[in-house]
Image 1: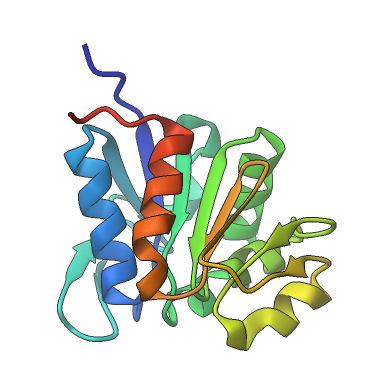
Image 2: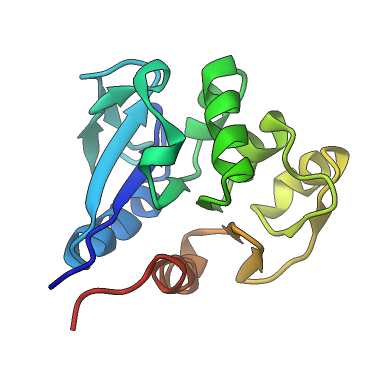
Length: 176
């Protein structure tokens, strides 16, 4: 019997295509239930490279972080469109306080910084936002993947295999 878990994806227009598609496909392949959360429900969101699009299932104001085993935040310009939203910040803060796994890649850690949960934490991100991470109290290190308690972070699409592997390990792999 599979131990299916609910996995949330925080998403807005302009996400990095592969940073959404590859983790999403792996979560589905491993039997997890995926829920795409955006600023509005039923909104079609396109990747910045135009290769994929996804429709949000829930709006952030109707989402409960305690419903999820993990939250994945793809990069691209999506995080910059989510990070200033008070409901997104509260969602991430509550998830972190409950030790829900939060996996953020590329520009994804901008959402974590805006939520104020990086103080004393070690993480990585797209190198261009290292200053934002450090100003938010985080310690930036330039590695493929960094795990600090419930946070999993990676830098770029090239790091996706390590990012996905660590995320699956944290929530439990179900596929053979």
